[in-house]
Image (cartoon, rainbow, N blue to C red):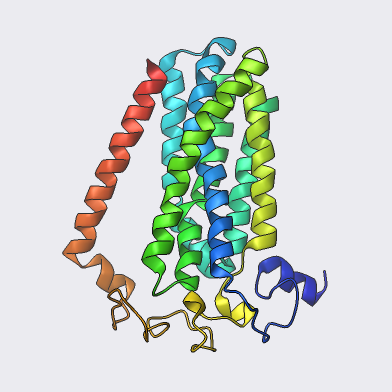
Length: 285
């Protein structure tokens, strides 16, 4: 592959035009829409949609509810445990490659669920390990890192919009997959074929629309014309800021040593554990 082709694939430069020539419209909102769609597919459909399919899969594969709960528990572990690895991949390879890898894992796992899985062990490997790892790599970690590069002054608004992806996606996924079951004579594999097709869309969106940082398009965070260097740090967009932006760059050691950080972590873990427990119990009843 040529140097230009490699640059296009990795997202270091745009697929068109001169990197030094700014585009007229701020690309951050398009990127936000792309990341929203990717996370909606990669998270919402496996998390919420699979619960609809599980009810039919249990009888078809002769699984007991405890086994099904164990499969979901493995998925929950794999969707969160590789989070630090996803963060390292974002730092080393960029947002596009990380999101693409996650989407490909969701694609492969969904394809296995649709065509190969014939036992609880198969489902644990395909859904629990492969799809779960895809959710970790192609989910919130990489997407939020990309948003942070494109938005500074409007970061809170962008993250709030992005956070609606899983909720809205779950609201859509369950009835859509239930409709698929109804149209396919309750063939749960058809639901996974639909998720596979959506994962293909996620892969294409990752390849076509994700850009690493505003400077790649000659733009600036938040679309501020005054910052022509495409800064992504705290100095970007300071002129018209309406929210507090710290003037201090926090190191990793400083962050983890703060009591407020761990308070937020404990609250977040409490909410996450509660949600996963309810989901697992729903699979076992």
